[in-house]
Length: 247
Image (tube, rainbow, N blue to C red; front, side, top):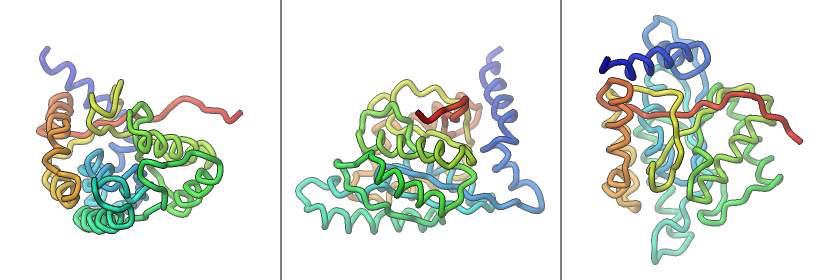
């Protein structure tokens, strides 16, 4: 009976196969890969890396194209440093991280700490994402205490709706219990083989105290989600489902 939870998680992931993550990752085990486009929208440099870097690396290794969109460039993220100087530092760190993950990167142009959710920015983000033609979009869980994370999530959700729900939408967690709350996963990805690659990408963000990022809970999260799945390390996601209607 001790494996009941793990068996359930694996069976649940398998049933999602044709719908999203499992199917994309299983493609790495067949001779011919049907290449898909994966997009991740994060609030700041280091969010996509810490939230789902292992999964992005695994999808890239499976042969899929991956793009990371940074909503802001982390302008307010280095105390005592001007916004311009901080943005320059953090942009370089993000580019290094994307190089390690082998992903394309886009900086959307919003300002750290002053993110905006309005129709103008919704149109901008929708255009950026539409130009990438994603099959899957990852973004922040909306129940997050960080305003920029919330804005990124809302922009992602509304883009998904306004583009006709043509791609699969998944939410990732960051610093669960401190930033992300009430997160009940629907999907898991075994990142055992890409865990170190993820860590290397996170550690590119020197200005953000990478050990602190892991102490914030990410090491424990990878371990705990792995235990839930029955593997060494995993990342967890909530898959968007049901119907949404614009009013």
